[in-house]
Image (cartoon, rainbow, N blue to C red):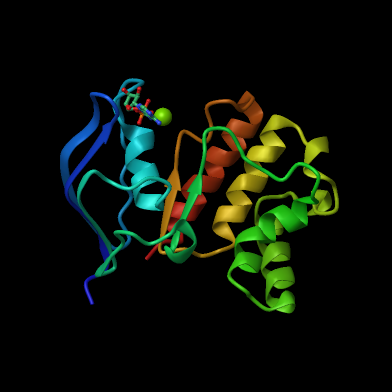
Length: 186
Ligand code: ADP
Ligand code: MG
């Protein structure tokens, strides 16, 4: 089975006449890292949302590890996305927020607990696990959103400018973490 992500002629139009993406094709072998750079409005978020399944392309195909993703719900894609603004369940604990995607996919409780502990340790947020998300700073919220993506061990991570709204020290810390994450990829 071919490993990697392939986009074939992906176009996204929004009504009435915005063409957010036009005929985008790319081929990323497994283990690649791609950084998309472009001005505001150039379609970066749109591209990630299409891969995650939050929107469907108007035309074209998205193939992940040999499987056409067209029409599959986000839950049934092996894809994790971190947004520019962390979206958490603010009344739930950090641990429940991190484990959300695993519960959705019916992982056993013990496995969820083990993985949540592990990822929280790696991101240095283990002491926050019982705290409700509403009592976190902006930087801590983004770390929880990152942990929620990492804990799933998805086929692909999508990061949509996840550092933009963080204070400098959190940004530095997460940058180092991304470098470390990169070195653990195949
Ligand atoms: P970027 O993330 O690079 O800033 P976006 O993907 O957010 O760019 O936007 C690409 C284009 O698509 C822009 O012209 C934007 O206005 C338009 N767009 C994005 N989302 C929508 C939407 N839900 N409805 C209509 N137009 C949209
Ligand atoms: Mg964007």
